[in-house]
Length: 112
Image (cartoon, rainbow, N blue to C red; front, side):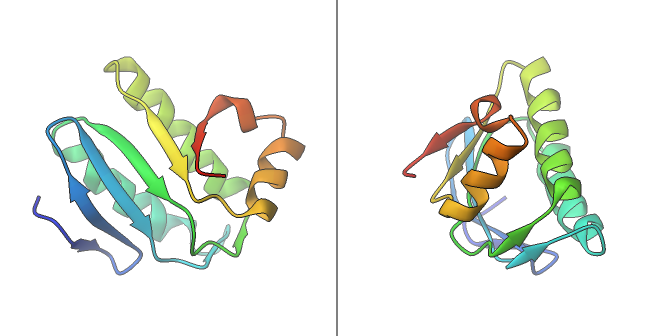
């Protein structure tokens, strides 16, 4: 994949290195009703070479457990391949939600 590839108009690869995709999440809301779109885009990333994924979360205004489930599943898939998922620019509300679910330490959070 080349730089700035848009996947289903909801995430964009802004930078790619040998072992890492840096991905900006364009969706402001990732909820039960639209999580399948996000899941499909993440699935496209996992079809290519398995790489670490850095999700830039700065655009997210609202998220629910379905979206968190996609992130958890992605982490599990990557962990089997000795890769990881990172969250960066996580809004305070999202971080508090992860804390409420008691999974904030499950993810490596950058620039919070």
